[in-house]
Length: 498
Image (cartoon, rainbow, N blue to C red; front, side, top):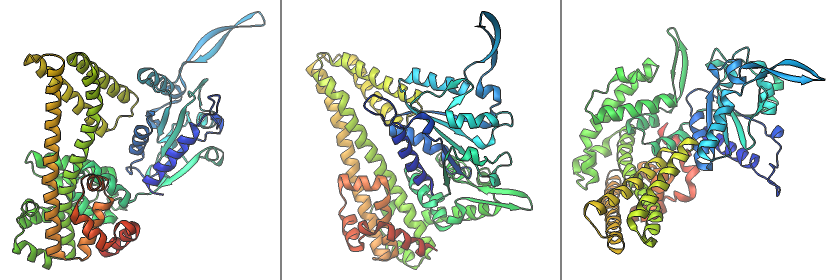
């Protein structure tokens, strides 16, 4: 299965493990709640999906890598305790609480969230002294003499032996106590994630043409070489920063993240072409409506790879703008919640302070539970910034508390709404110019199919279109019947590219 399917299976497992009866007891006893074992190659996103699951389900997450743990650190340290048996006093060995279990209790206390996921990565790489104790843990959820708290689901992960020399294969007895999910690298699944994460369009366009390089491991005369999804994402992030600061992006940079000489050279050659396409076609000019006959003629005569790269650059730009607008819309909707409380309050100034404190507490609680996504963090900070700014301005400009103060707050909010509407108007024009150019250069050919399909399957662009509409999209979507044939069209596009 791919990582997205694994994520759904894990969510469903957690959902049923946490179901309770009318007395508040878990319907599946803890001893029958099989730990989940996520088995897959390194760098395909096993850790990332655990964070996403915790965030989406509103539960806590405690994560540990087992490679550095010894028997003592995992099970606790021994100490001597005196006990009376049959009138005699004896020295008895006891164990302190495991660092891992202590982290769970700390998380519950600090966040107030009592249910969660204990994620143990690289569990099949545990030390030889710890290995015998893992069977007891996997069956009874016990470290030493201390149990994992009820309401905490155990998810483990590991790499197959071919990827890690430290791996020790579990025996049948151990595997029979696990719910095993074998995960394979899948570009189509990662692509949707990468689009939402803002991965560099040069990376996405290159992998669209060279899907076999998305995840690649081989043994050469120089040793093991590898390229992983994690490597591409990390490279993308640093490329964007380099470009922002005007620094040189070249093969020496690529080689720091892609451990394969051939792929580094091919991506380096493509990156040069990518920048050439940007210069030759003047992407920004096209989206602004300056569609020259020369650009249309050049696109018509270009190879399919070049047309696909051009389309990728155009799509990346407009989808990024769509995503920003959708996030702003979500921010304004969320901001209305504290503003309603401000409107109903006797003192606008005091209520703004209370709402800031409540929002800050919520953000910190989610952070302590390790259940705060980057998008949620941005949302909280945008709301805090707005509330803090209007509160500060009310004070500095001596605006009378009450009706006058709220009128000012509403004015600032309305200004944000107006700015978003202006952004929607601008984006709508740019999307229209994208379709206009695609129609002129590609008519209703395969590239138009790719364009409409990408807008349909991408989460941000599909939300944008459902919220604000797009006549061009609906026109070509109807002609190509994309909505009704999403899966078939994906297969068709795969065949076109190869």
